[in-house]
Image 1 (cartoon, rainbow, N blue to C red):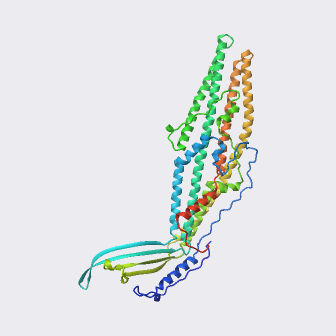
Image 2: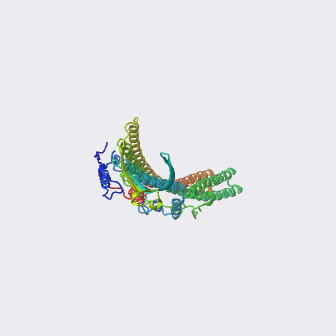
Image 3: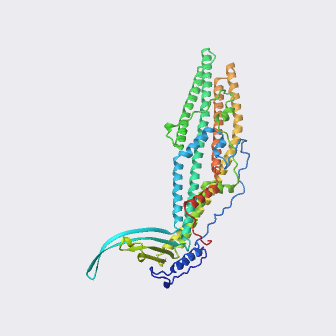
Length: 526
């Protein structure tokens, strides 16, 4: 739709103009002032005013089970979200990433570029003022008389396009919205790097726990091999028992070595995220357990990081807390403003210009009254025929807005899915970890009983091997579940925006707009 507007009519009578040498008041200036004020007060912006695209959101999430663990702190916008894990090493790594990660630096540079583009669009609201000065020497021929003369000039000139139809203001509106979208992109990039770093770090620490588990397992298998070897030498065990014990030991050693590849890759990834070369970065492993029986109970303490409580909030909160949704919404606002820019091309442009200065053949007399020159003018330009170019631009701008709205809605739906996925994952993993902890206890008990029975000669070594393999598998599953819970908790924090607030970004964008250029000329309400 087109916003109603009032046509501006103004004229300046030629009888108000007098010779520059005349001392009579320059009444033409008053006429131009009237024209200027009429353009200012009568201005309006064509095109639709922006309204955030409406979406029907659920009142609550589908997942509402008791998935949360009772843990120390919750994530909110008053603290960096990663501090909720209580790991000082993680805090330090994310601080380094915020300062040195190149992806964040790239997004920050793009945001500065968007700010400059928005400032450029706002600058068009103001007149352009220039200064000129010159000196020339030339020869003229008049009626066969050649004359050599000097000319000296100095003056000021100014021009201003009266934004009667709001084309410039719509362009500035689009520039501001694009800058705010870029600010949200920067926040999204920073959040993505922080979440990736936190997940890589937590997975590395879980890998350390797995390595510690296999080190303890290797030691236990080595003792079992020694026991079996002694019994074989004493004639109370078979040679196959020794072979089984040795096979089990070597397999555990191979798995322990294999974990180094996983840990090294995670360490290299963390180095890249904090802006360092892999050769210049290393992380010491977590402290090893001192007792095998209660090692699984001590995993959380040795891991340092704890699983935080994460309030998911309401689905509508995502519209304000997720930077990618804010980015998509601001891009829709920019596309809406571009419709006004395209529609303003249907109307004429009004340009006001003025210049004044001095022109004299002698430099000493340059600033004398007879050398004073001036000019005032107004130009009205309108395109009568362009082969449908303006109509095509309007259609393209409308289609771009429709695409931006669809992208915004798809981003919102994707955010809802991410929250639901991670809520569901955490709930399931919480139930699974409780059952797995019981399985670990039962497997460890079965392992101890089988070893005692083998030592008493009541079972074969195959029973010991079977129970040991089962115990190792369950312990490793328990550690893996802990890692999956931690990674899923980071994913949920990222899905809910990580404490980021769209209001803060909008306020920062408004402050940037206020400090980058002077206040715009007063215009009528759109």
